[in-house]
Amino acid sequence: MKYEVVERKPRFLSKGDVSKLLGFPLQDEGAELSRRMFLFSVFTGLAFVDLRGLRALQIETNSEGKRYIRKARQKTEVESLIPLHPIAEQILALYTKEQSRGDYKIFPDTMSDWKLLRHLKAVGLACGIRTPLTWHCARHTFGTLTLEAGVPIESIAKMMGHSSIASTQIYAQVTDQKIAKDMDRLTKKQLSKTSSFSQER
Image (cartoon, rainbow, N blue to C red):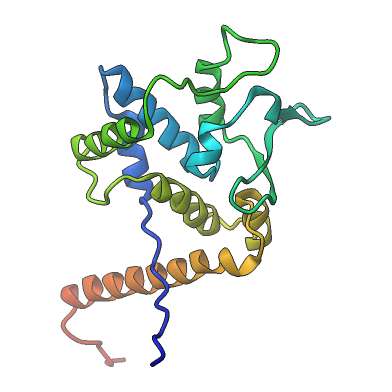
């Protein structure tokens, strides 16, 4: 008996959800670290294992003074080349001020993976975000939002360290579905305002 392989749709945050996460006040250090790591992944596309292992020497500067991450993805061993978004730069600055030279892990190993995830889920609930926050969700958010912003799929594949562009195509499918749903909502909203199309001249 053959079973059909069903490809799961990636869960991702909307721009509005990301804004909620950026602006929500937090007092707990563990929750703050989880949020910063999650947002760093949202704006770089790094998988959790690569986020955990990110080191200072993997942050490079090009001839134009722009900084980027150059790192082989642990899962595929494919090199990722990721220009740093201004928000990612802001987060990075919080962990590089005191250690400006040499090589070191960017994010501190002060909590277990399980505790980081527990804090992350609590932050999502506190922000009123309906989509459960996971590290996969952060990476999927990067893939989806960059594609929606018009970044070529080949560039996204390179940034995400995909071994094949086929892995990146799922974000194109999700974006197409979102466009269709948005159009449906717009159509329904317009139809509710006008009962019929006037053909009078």
